[in-house]
Image (cartoon, helix red, strand yellow):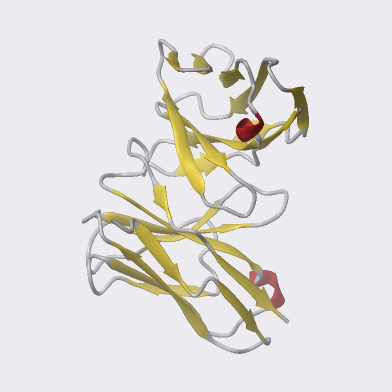
Length: 114
Length: 110
């Protein structure tokens, strides 16, 4: 049972380039989330999804887009990367709403934008 | 006031000692509280949920003080393997949004 898998684990981009981070979960969870973690700050929610075909904005959605075409996958896209998007990105999933349910995180994707 | 505040430390703890730290939260309506553990360059993992009556899991004890709006985590008989950052997580209500603290870094020293 793999849990939550993120790809790629590391990526270096130049300013203006685009990329997609893939998150896959095999626990049949309804809810999926994308967070970013920066030094000296708590995890911040970028976007989330409460089910297949749905997405919603979190605290820091600007510069990112997401899609949830299949229940098990949640994609995070950067259309035009900026140095401010250098961060560690964590995907997470939960069976129910995050307020009362355990989050299972992926191992993280470290992105550097030059 | 920040939604969730933690003293980042580090908390340098001799092996076998007890360490405790608090996390304050701003929303008096919050109903769910959690401690997650994050090892260096790893993902956060749930350590324990925090219930109104407090809860204990082995050497770890979590408590909630609603009147003063803080939760606490106590680690007894610290092990080297307890070295990690402990994240305080609070349900901010409404749309069930979670707020994460910056974490308390614990370093257990032999």
